[in-house]
Length: 179
Ligand code: BEZ
Picture 1 (cartoon, rainbow, N blue to C red):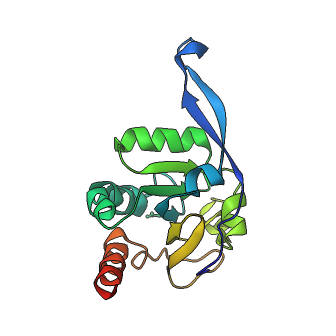
Picture 2: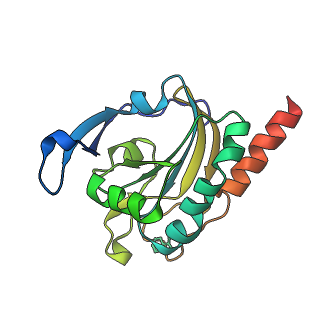
């Protein structure tokens, strides 16, 4: 993946818009991956599902808490992507009280498939989801890659280690020291 461009896809997001009125004032907003990645150095992390235990207890909250450290190391944004629709991702973000990490709904799995990271999780009744990975993406090009071991369909475990925010911070710090 190193040196490769992230795929160009359109994400279908839901945004609040008071002009819609009523009890649920949200509308669709298409956002291109170019809008997320062009001209920025970002950390992207991808996980098997919103509201799942490891993602909700450790991975997402830890990225959220460590945002200041990432920014100090030249990261402009932190994106969390999952093969979940915009309604689910928005509900997850609200339940987590997110202020820093931005959630990207890859509901159809197109981005994840084109990244080569789509796996079957039929053993859990999940359908197609993302293998867990993270990347530092600089202006749309993958600069650093952190993929959990054992990429496979219907994996009976859910490894989480190398794509943790702590590991990515370590890599960014050693890159800075070496520079
Ligand atoms: C977890 O994050 O703990 C998890 C992810 C996928 C399936 C089951 C659990």
